[in-house]
Image 1 (cartoon, rainbow, N blue to C red):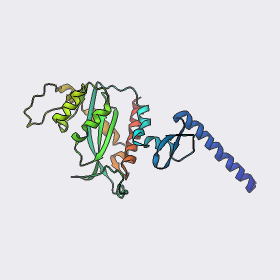
Image 2 (cartoon, rainbow, N blue to C red):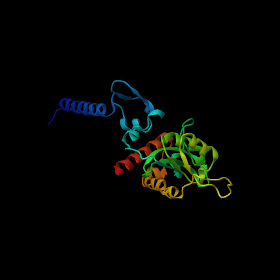
Image 3 (cartoon, one colour):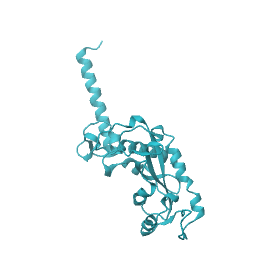
Image 4 (tube, helix red, strand yellow):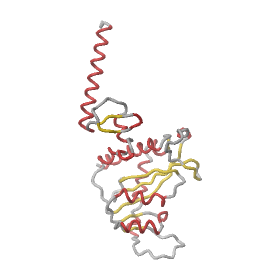
Length: 242
C-alpha cells in the first residue's frame, strides 16, 4: 500500500512530467507560443494552457488556419474554381452573445450559412470564406480572388456573371471563364467550354467537406468556431490527397 503523502508526490511527479513533455513537443512544432484568453496568440515564454492546437487553428484573424496553410502542398493554380454552398444551421447554433460574428442568415430554406470555396486544378481547397446564407456568391468573389494568388484561369458559374468581377480578375492578369446569363447581350470571347466542364471539381470538394457531420450541419454558435472546423476538414482532405 502506498501512503497518502507518497501517492501525492507520485501524482505531482507524473503531472510535472506530462507538462514537460507537452512543453518540449509544443516548442518543437510551434515555437514559443502562449495561449491567452479567447484564443489570442502572441510570442512569449511557454506557459501550459488549454486547447493549444485549437488556438492555432482559430486564433486571431491573421493567424486563422495557420496549420492548414502550412500543411497544404504545392498548389496547381493554373485553373482555380470558385463556388458557394448552403449549410443548414441547427437550432443549437442560436443564442450567441450580441456583438459576436455569427455568419448566419435567413434564406428560403430557413437559417443557413454559406461556404464560399476556392479550389485548385486538382479540386483541393485553397481557401474559403463563410457568410450568412442571404449573401450572394458575387458579393464574396473579390475576397476569394484575393486569397488565391497568381492564377491563370478563374472558373465560376453564372452566379458570378458581373462586369465588375470580370474587370477585377482581368486587372490581376486572370482570365475569367464565366458563362453569360441567358438575357445578356454582351460578347464572351474568353469562355472555354472544356474548362467550364471541369467545374465539377469544386462541387466534388463540397461533397467531401459535407462528409463531416459538423460541416454538413452547423452546430457552432460563433463563426470563428465553425470556420475552425472547416479548416480541420480541409486538412483531412489534403492529408488524404498526399
